[in-house]
Every structure is written in structure tokens, then in C-alpha cells.
Length: 593
Image 1 (cartoon, rainbow, N blue to C red):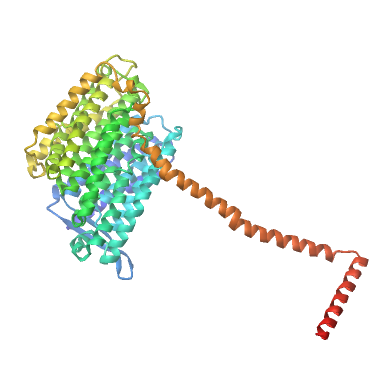
Image 2: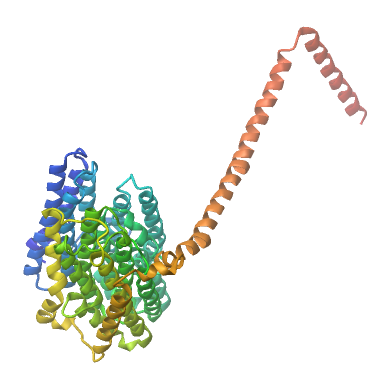
């Protein structure tokens, strides 16, 4: 790796990190400087990664020792290849759009300063995960992302659900991260290195049982970050955060990290058929669960959140059949159209003051740009040709032909995705206008126009210049047929009224993920809380009780002796005589024996 490339890679991570740390030190109300630092951090990162894409000529590595524990060394190292740069470009581009969009979206937010700084640090953490050449360095970026997500989801303290959602996201992902940490430690101890290239080169040195154990532990962390069943429940609740943060988390950073890590370490996962099978089953359940839950949600952001869960399932399904390039391809197209969809949803919410689609309608005339760009995003999500999602999703479905059960799960997901996307478009932009809406200011519409370009043309561009990333199978007609069926059913069922309203309480039950939150609460949360209460009672009444009891007994004994020492002279004299008599009796008795 040339000195210039090393310097640019370090600057790519360091620029948003440094400017974010500076932003945290600034007064919260200093909006102009906070905005300038936030936009500059993402803009510099975007410029650097563009330069690296132009300069990069293949795999590049650089490393220096950071700390050593005996023979086990931890390094500050980077691993830069085309795949990493593509993902880094998506991260920087989405972060830039989010920073610009947030200036107008949070125009009256008194805590905008720390918000913009935290977004910059979040961006730097994701870039660390993407470009790291050492598992410990990757783990640091992985954990910083978790901390930043907690702060950003809980940003609006006025919403009581925001802190609760942040805590839930933090705890659920931390459970998975315990497994991830253990997997990293086992790899380092067994192989004597944490450097990713060396780990992948020496996978054959590990026995089959160790490989499977490590992969399953890593998958626990991956499932947490990428919201895979059964760790998916935090993601819909994370909608309590500001809409630009939803775009950032759902499109190009936190949820994409798990997919990217599996792709980065794929030679390790490929060595365990058990791990790939578990990944495939998990992906199949996730993509269908997310798709069906999205059909019944009324909150527009919650529909998109469940959609993210489902699309992440597609990426994991591709990885489970060794289709790494299609998985990353869909990650990139999804980053574009899902960021676009969330920012469009933010524009609608900003205009009408509500998240509920049942209170919207008829907005296509008063918000034409938002309508057109959201239609492009939804079309890409469904997989309508020639939009970006068509190419990447078709590549995945073609790769899944080797596992027919998973392919049919993906095809059913296409139809369901088309149905709920049509419902969202109709309820929001067609029919009777219940609330007045208007296009937001330029700082919010400009990112929509920018993101609409890759959402429309990224797939065609990749097919034109890198056709090796696009695998169109012989069953091309099936995804198109399923998408057409879903759109047609959605149009017929939703063009006049929302059919979900007729389901009564069943609708919210489906929209909340089929009650899995309740199951999780009774199986995991309540038993843990009961155990915590029992431990507290045992600690306070048992351990503390014994300690406090001994202390109180000592105090009482001392107080009694103190009273005897302060007795009047006659009683004291009587006590002395009584003691003397006892000693005499004891002496005589012992002498007789």
C-alpha cells in the first residue's frame, strides 16, 4: 500500500471522528458551527473515499503494532479492497445526505450540536468496521456504533418512548455482542493473531468444532446488529429516534455492519456448513416475518423499519448460499433506496405533523417531489425494473435456486413487499387529503433528489460496468410475476380504504411483529427481572442482613457493658463480690475434682 493510500485511509476514518469530537466540545446552541462540522466531516469522507476508488488497484493492507499481550499482538491495521470501498462510499454518501437533511429537519432542536457530532462519530465507527484489518479494531468500531445508536435513538427526550427504545436497542444488541466478543477472543487465542488476512489464511488450522463454535458466536453479534430473528425486535422500536437517524441506521451503518462482517469473514463461515444452515434458516424467517409485519403497520416509519428487517433477511439468505457479491450488491442498492424512503417519510411527517398513514392521503399534488422520489424508492424496494433493487434482488433470488425452500421464501417476500409498498404509496399520496402538506425547504429536498439517482440507476450502472456482480437466472419471470401480483392486489385492496382497519385488534398485533415482543418479555425479560429482584432481596436480607445483624448485636452488647460500667457504687460493689464468690466456688470445685 502506498503512503498516499495509507494516509487517505486514515484520514477517511479520522476526519469525521476528529470533527465529531470537536463538535461535542462546542456549545449545544451553536448551530452554524455544529452544522458546518457535521457536513464537513461527511463531505471530507465522501471526497476521500471517491479518491480511493479512483486510486485503488486491488487489495491493499497496512499494519502497525498497537499493543501486545505476550505473543498475542493487537494491530492498528487497514484492509482496503473494492468491496470495502464500495461500502465505505455508501456510508459516506448517506451520512452526507443525513447531515444536510438534518439542518432543516431539526431546525428548532436545542440539542442539534451534540446530535450532529454523534452522527459524525457514528459514521467514523462504521468506516472503522468497514476498513479495519484487525478483529480488535473492528470490534472497537462495532461497539462505538452501539453506543452512538443508543444516544441518537434517545435524542428526543420529550418522547417517553425514545429512552425506552434506546435502552432496548442497546441491551438486545449487547446480548449478541457477548457472543461476538467470545468468537473474536477464541480466534485470536487459537490462531495467535487478530489480523483478518492472517485469520482467513489459517482457517484450515482450526478443527471443525472450533470453526462452527466461532461462527455461531459471531452470528449472535451479527444477528443483533443486523436485526435478524430472534434479535430483530429492537429495530422497529428504534423509530422513536429522529427520522434522519432512522435513515442512517437502516440504510448504511449499523444494520449493514452485520452483513458486511459476514461477507468480510466469509472464508471462515464457508468452512462450517452448520453455520451456513443456521444463517439460512434465520434469514428465511427474518425476511418473511419483516415483510408480513410491514403489511399491517400504520406508522409510516414502522412500515419502513419492518421492510429493513425483511431486506436484511435477503442479504443474509444470499450469504448462506455463498453468494457474497449479490449480498453486497443488495446492501449497496438498499442503502440508496432505503435512505431515500426514510428521508421522504421524514418530509411527509415534517409537513403533516403525524407518522400515521391513516391521517395522510392526497399528498401527491401538494408534495410532487416527495411523491416522485418516494415512488422511485418504493419501486426499487419492490424490484421493479429497471430500478436498482430489481438487479440486486434478482441476483439474490437467482443464487437461491440451489436452496428451493429459501428461494420460495424470497419470492413470497417479493409479493408481500410489493403489496405493502403499494399500500404505503396509496394511503400517503392518493385518495382524500386529510391534512395539508407542502414541500420542505431545499436542505431537505436536495438529499431526496441526490438519493433518487442511485435508487433509479445504480443497478443499470453496475450491470454495465461490473456485470460479474449481476447474476440474472433463468427464473427471472418468477420475481417479476410475484411483484406484479403484489402490486395488483395492493392496488385493488387499498385504493379506496385500508383493509387492515377491518382486522380490528389483529391488525396492530401483526404490525407489532406477531406478539413476539410479548413472548420475548415473558421468556427473557420477566424471568431476568424476577431473578434480579430475588438477588436483591437475598443481598439485602441475607448478606446485608447478616452483616447488619452482627453490627447491631455488637452495638447492643457494647451498650450493655457500658451500662454496667456506669453502675452506682453499691451495685458495682455487689457485682464485684458476686464475681469473687463465683471464682472461689469455681476454684474449690476444680480443686475437689
